[in-house]
Length: 143
Image (cartoon, rainbow, N blue to C red; front, side):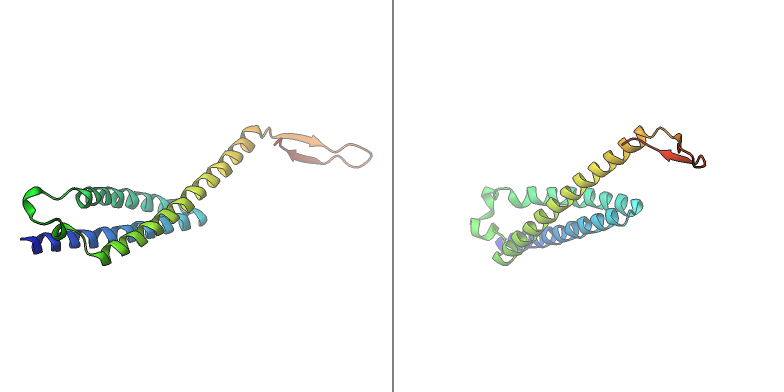
């Protein structure tokens, strides 16, 4: 019975590891979509991020749950040390990517706000050059 439990826990840990790596790939994809100004790609990536995050949350709850009292020794309920090491590394990588992604979104939001402010203040008034020269019309806007 404990071998089956350990096998199931290791299978879940392997799935969790794969989901962490997939989510990291989606964050990279989203950042590339922002850099390439590809809204469809960004929207698709965000949808995938939501799906992956939900599945990760479910798996994390199961993996972090205490062992049931009738399952035998706690050691049989633990995850293989190799998976633990890989999970920690994948989690650290994902946290780093998440900080970069948050920074990119924050910076992009500021840029969008500046552009919106620029266009709100745009008055579209014609100004004519003064002096002895011919009168030329130019566009101006206030920033």
